[in-house]
Each structure stands twice: as C-alpha cells, then as structure tokens.
Image (tube, protein in one colour):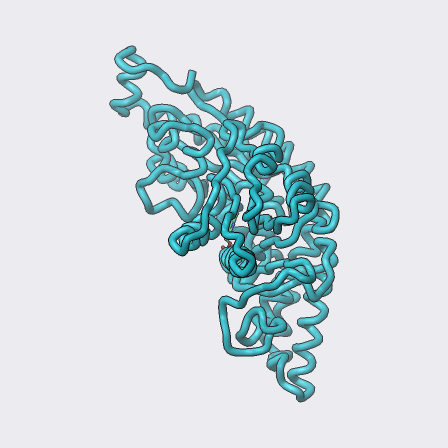
Length: 396
Ligand SMILES: *Cc1c(COP(=O)(O)O)cnc(C)c1O
C-alpha cells in the first residue's frame, strides 16, 4: 500500500487546478504587460484570478500581491512592516518561538540591524494566548506576527483576538496562514488581519506561487525591483499559469472546506487513537484545537529519522517534523518551544492527511507505526536503559 501522509510539506495538485492552468501554458501565453491582444488575454486572466483569490479571504483585489510562495510572502510582510516602523522610530517586533523559519530567520536578520525581537513562549499545548501579546506590546512595537496554524504540530492560534489587540494598540498584525488555507476559515476583515501569507502548494495548487495580502494603506516594500508589476510591490513577469492554478485550487478548497474538515477530523482522530495505544507516546499539541489533518507524536526511546525510513519501506510517506528541519540533526524548534526535551523531540513523527486518504490507509498506518516503533525499541540502548530502570521515562 502507498500512503502519502506528508501534506503539510506539500500536496498533490488537484485536477481542477491542473486543467485550469493548461490553456495558459498553451494558447494564452502572452505577457500581461503587453498592449496587444495576446497580452491582454493574459492580463484578463490575472485580474480574474486576483479577484477570485480576494473573494476567498474577504479582501479586495488590490490588496493581493502575488509572490513566489509562503516564504517570500512572510519575508516581505515582515521587512515591509520593519521599514515602515523604522521611519517612525519603532523598532520592536513581537512573534512566537514556533513560527516557520521564513519568519524566524527574517526576524534574526532584523535583530542584527538593531531591531528588538520578542519571541513569545508557547504553552505546552502549542497555543499562544492573546494576553501574552497584550502584555508584550510597547510604544515602539511596529509589528506582531503570529501564525494561524503551526506546520509541525497543527495547533490553531487565536488570531482574531490577537488581531483585535493589535488594532486597539495601533500595531500591524501579520499572520502566516499557509497551513490554515483550505482547512480553517479565513476572513481578513472579521479576523482583524493586516497582512497574511498563503502558499498554493499547501492547498493542492502549484508550487512556487503564493500571495501576500496587505490591507489597503499598509505600505509594502518590494523585495524584487525592476518593473511596475503588482503596482511596484514585486517586479517580474507574472507566473500566469501558476496564478490561475492557485485561484482554482483555493476556490475549490474553500468551497469544500467544511465537508473536507469533517472527514479529515474523523480520520485524524482515528489515527491519534491508534497511536495513543503505543506505550510511552505523547501527542504534540492540543488534541482539539489542531488542524483537521495534523497528527504529531513523540515516542520515547527511538530516533524519528529511523522511524521514517522504516515507514517509507512500508510505503508510507511521513515526516519527523517540518521538511525544512529534516536533513539537520538539530531537534525541531517547535517541539523544543512546547517544552519537549531534546531526547524526546528526536523521537517525533508527523503525519498530515489530505482528502485522498482512506480509512483503510489509516488502519494500515497505525499497524505499521506500532510495528516499527516496537522494532526500533527492541535494539535501542536508550529503551533498554528505560525498561531496566537505569533511566527514568520522560513520557509516562
Ligand atoms: C510551507 C510553509 C511556508 C513556506 O511556503 P513556501 O511556499 O514553501 O515558501 C511558510 N509557512 C508555513 C507555516 C508553511 O507551512
């Protein structure tokens, strides 16, 4: 059996998105900046896609800037707020310890330039409280950036309440909603959001395309210079096929969001219940306030990387954390942020579902993980020390 359970890393493109893209790689290939009819056909597609995307998140089309994906949108949101803040002498930014590296690394860069960064602690259940934000805001704060849902442990943050606090205090609020899109409702008006990042390949759209929403009046500093595209906010000929594919994918995801979420939650909870039967295992993040398709566990006495390889042999594509941390030996900053100690954080497994997964696949995966964990423990010196009482279990 082949089971793809790494949808937080990327998703399969939907046939709707693919079919929507085809004409723009074939007959409609003009440059939207050209004045002739071939260019104008492309320009029309750009206008339509922008409007469809804006409608999905409660924005107006002019507030949507197309980027190369979530990382670029995060970079541009933060750097834009920093440049605007700097001019007013406001050089303090608030974020959280478990953001995506596209946020954290941008903040580190600003810190070297003299910005002060406050990274809020995350509670053990993987959630940041609005009160923490309220307590951290200062007169010189220019930006609060808190993700909508975490990409490793799937926990959902109270962004509407955080946005309200920011609005009251006159501070810009950015949210990385890359994992939320298609799974949670997004409305930039109701949720008091000033800037928001999305990435198409996380909701069955093409890779290499995303958006940065910025409320009218929020000045965006371009990361790429060289042309008047996107009202000067991002130079370069627009990737029309990808933009059209993203619009189709987002619309499809939003239309079926509630039905899909119901089905995914049911599969997710079966998977969680199954894995909870493994002794000395712990679920990462709140059991209820998490993305419909996210399951994240730590198993004591094993290495997450070895578990992944065993599962791959059984046809299961999983992850130990985020795709960005695999390949490095450091444990996930997200798991450390929720208080997992290094040894435990190393024994992590993330399984993220999509609409294509079936009950059968879930049952198969539960058995496969159980077997693989037992097998790895059978020759793990750490596990041996634990069961013989030489070492104490961290996960009871
Ligand atoms: C995937 C992801 C990103 C990066 O998006 P890309 O389009 O791959 O650059 C940013 N933030 C979160 C939360 C993500 O999951």
